[in-house]
Length: 70
Image 1 (cartoon, rainbow, N blue to C red):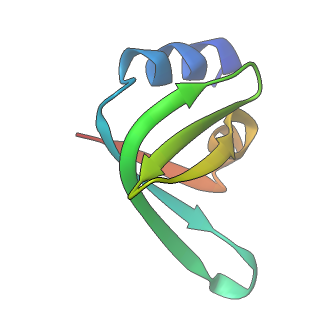
Image 2 (cartoon, helix red, strand yellow):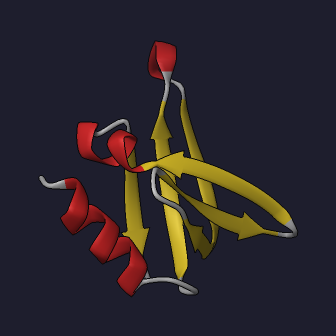
């Protein structure tokens, strides 16, 4: 998967609802629901209840996070 394709896919879904699943250490899984808020050169962010959470494109490529678009 190419980082430019990932950025394009995320930019196409800007201001839409997403669920980001983060696979952490020791089988810990966190889910964040929110609106795809902003994109930057190396990261993108979602916002939920006024709280902004940022993720990197590389984490998506490596499978450390999964994004579900609505």
